[in-house]
Length: 282
Ligand SMILES: [Zn+2]
Image (cartoon, rainbow, N blue to C red; front, side, top):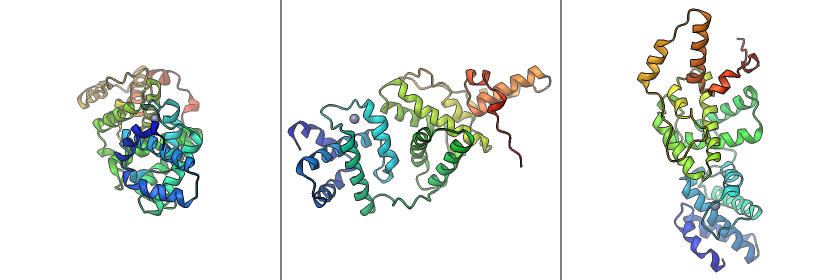
């Protein structure tokens, strides 16, 4: 490693990846890489370790999706203290070796194993995004990575019980995401993913008003303050005030429910058309 990278080496040694550095180096030597390449890969691992620490990612949850997130989301906006290793091709290769090594040592799950409750939940959500909402593969992958982090953080390997999620859990999760996003615009991705996920859960009949409320004000969200949501009491009063007799009253009720139950923005509600509504027949 060249001297320019010495100050960042502490990132690696302070990270959860520290216990795996020796094995990583031995693995690269086994692969008979030139010393220059080994140095580059180690510098790449250092950068990645810093990101993992910043994002509070558990080393046991590392996988291809998270690495893709690092390469696609962090790298283009990287604001880490320089000098930092930035070559995408080498980073991709180095982190591929890291996964091989972590799998070989039983630190992370094998690729073929993906049957935890969180994995199953993500598969169902992906089906919904694919078949109901028709989202592009890249968007789905991105959303899945974000929701995966939320669910792992909340439920680890336990069943996913949405009713146990509290607005404060979501606020904390969003705050953690916004710490990672140094430009305001990039906060919109986690917010969109959360809104999409809660919208999906609403279609399953979950009561997610409060959770949706936390993600209701993403436009030009400033990182310094987190959005406020209606309290339980305020929601009860709002719902109690609704009337369902007469077209105007029913229209008003429908608008309120679109905002509360589905988390739609006012502009989205105003532009709703018949094509936006899926007709299910049992
Ligand atoms: Zn960086």
